[in-house]
Amino acid sequence: MSKAIVLLSGGLDSTTVLAIAIDRGYEISVLTFNYGQRHDFEIDCAKDIVAHFNIKTHHITNIDLGSIGGSALTDDLDVPKDRDLDEMNSEIPITYVPARNTI
Image 1: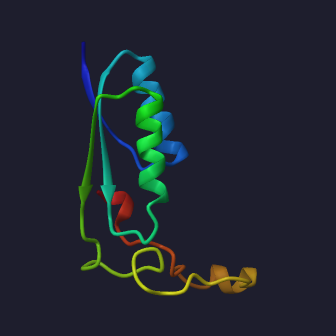
Image 2: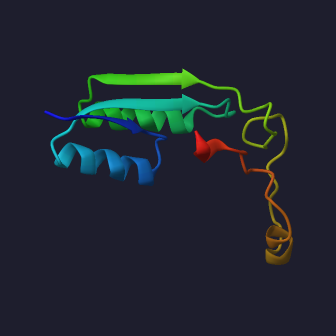
């Protein structure tokens, strides 16, 4: 049986990749990154998904993205609310976590 490591954030895209790998018969190991987000929601979702699919190997690895840049999701910054569309399109949102998807 072929083996695969699936990077699982707890979101829809990575969950779909996991389901496809399982469907194709791979022996799966799952890797989730804790990049210092303030809320554990994504990691909790990843744990639930791993349990749902009965995956035996799930590693959660801590990484520090703070040296790359800050975000309202990783730092003690308020998440902006009630902005108009022009304001949202004018700059990179403070909720953007630099390099999160390049790992």
